[in-house]
Length: 97
Image (tube, rainbow, N blue to C red):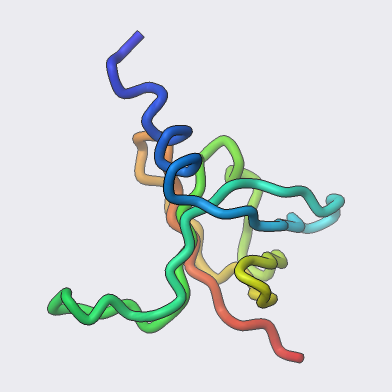
């Protein structure tokens, strides 16, 4: 087993919070995810949209338009980008009320 196989689980367990995701046509389920709701002003390039990072196995069925509830707010998935090392970045947009 490669030495970093368990890293995604450790990352979300240490830095994550519970998110409720609802992939199209499925029931809602809870996953652990690392959430950033504001730009990181310490970087030269800021992220204008909320970003969620989850284990790829938890996010493999998420697509554009799927519902996410995290940090007390409702979002829609806009872009899903696996990193090839067990984590997936999910760009979110605040859901219309």
